[in-house]
Length: 279
Length: 273
Image 1: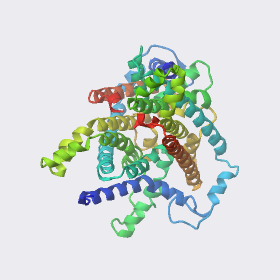
Image 2: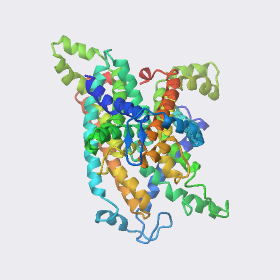
Image 3: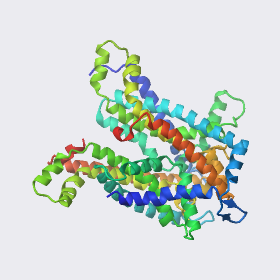
Image 4: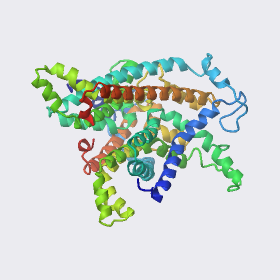
């Protein structure tokens, strides 16, 4: 190996500083959430305790944290499943030109770039004017899909751009029906990428704020609850909650990444050449 | 196969936009909104000096954030793609850059408080170093804080597409340039940057639209002292003035689509995936 140029060390330092910038603040509030009972929102630490975490688990005046967590979790799973299924269907459809495909493509781009508050406002208006009640599982669910579906579809486009069609042709030549081809050839090959789509679907929904603002109705999701807290809570209990949900997010991300790693390995171990299609 | 997606987008994207366009012509009383065809909302919007200031502010945020995210994002992606030599490390470091994207933006905003507050880490450090005599007030709840938060939240939208295009640059092109006697800077300027343009455009589209459509970062990080168009809309919504919120929303949407339309002339997104 040739020796590293000097620029490598400059850039490494830059990268390390970038990571510090990225994670530093989050780590800081994680530390501050262990403030002693008399501590405030900034350093110094006045002792260390679990006081603020305990606060979260007690019934309190600031709202319904655990209820909103359960709602966000359920909504995240709903959005995740829907995003995966619809993205795969859409990805398969887009492999051929179909009537309205370019319109749909531009709709997907619009969905990605439209300011979130417009979705919130528009969906809220439709529901209120037609006498329907906004609820996180109906209007909130649909609004979040307009944010997760574009990501899911773009991933599927990327996957199918690299997909080797000869595997399907081989399956068809051997007499597989189109369903068998899909089930036994296409889906196993794109499997690991679907875990990626699921990760996007779940986490983007779980953290979504703007699109749920006017569409979740009287029951808040967790991000709405947290934002409400920022205006009236001035104790480290806010950090404790922030730390807990970040830890939860990290666990979910870790879970998805492990699943992806596992399914890639499994594919490789099965001794098939299936994975080569999406290199 | 594409029908379900079409249905979702029709009901939750197209219909809401049409609804907003319609409501932007309606009239509002204190308690309700009334269907009408009235240009009053637009007249008020374009007749007010606030509108132009706020739109200017929105573009200012977008431009400054874009410049910083591009500079940082390009450098990070360049390091990952050309200086990290093993694929495993590339993936690990790349994931480290993207993980925050899957966590909550609101919490990432909140987490700047202990840094930037009057008694925060930044102020106490500067005080103890003797750089300043009294705490700086403009760190939190200012335009500085807004831009900082934007850069913090959105730099990875630059890193990902730029890294993606860089990874697809044929390494032999760089070797050829070196064999032909190009210096490192020349390779960067004449080979890598031109080939990375599509990634830069995609990152730009993301950052510009996210910043232009934002309302929550500006509200939270400026302590309600600065405004952008998104906040104008959310303020109207809070006052239940939906028609005027809708009119502002229509103008914002047209502005964003115009900006994106111009950018899409330079890049074919489907080819770049």
